[in-house]
Image (cartoon, rainbow, N blue to C red; front, side, top):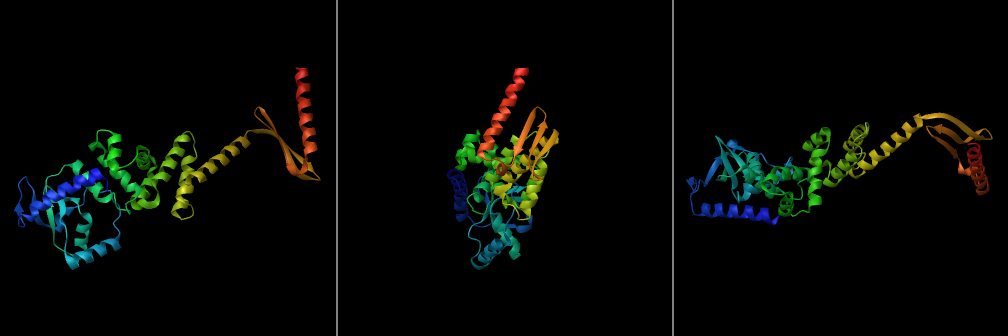
Length: 304
């Protein structure tokens, strides 16, 4: 958790917890803050929650701890019409649902949409199991809280180059982002940034999206590592280009030795290409060939 967000969260919670310590349950605080037992069924997840997946084993472990020693810290909520939204503590709320508890200790307070986003990111960002894709979505949600991208990066403890890697996910095709919503760990920010760069470099290509889809299918099948996606696509593009050039060949003749093909002479557009297997041309023959070709060119120039 970054210092700025951590400080904001800590100050908010400490202020509320201090008031909680001085008050009994269900007593309203000054400033429209209160500590109360809120029905679990009336609580909704934070709409700015960056986390897409809550591992079941982890929730069960937390639920077991709560069942044994109780809830050590109330969750933070805001009232929205006839229900509540979580600002901080979604894991604890989910654990209560697992335990079948009807209520959960909560601090209810006024909080803006921007603060909801900041609280949620602050609560999750320092956890190692939060994916790059989830962090990228969360940063986008809170960026309007900060006056500039520079201030945003500084507050998150990131350099701007790394922060923009998180933004690369939003420029990927929809079929990739759809899979990332279900499994956000499929792609790191570095791999996403590399794919975005390759797509930008080949905007005019009619085949690159098809090659990306092919690579992505291999990734999902565990047959291609995410770090190899751009290399796979680059090779496909190169082969495609070479094949297209091959279709422009207007005339081609094979060179043979003992009835075996050892090379070709081909005309493609404005170029005449001679390819000979190096196994049949030693240094002496190569020099003779160079001299012969040069003589032919000079002879043509003289005629012109």
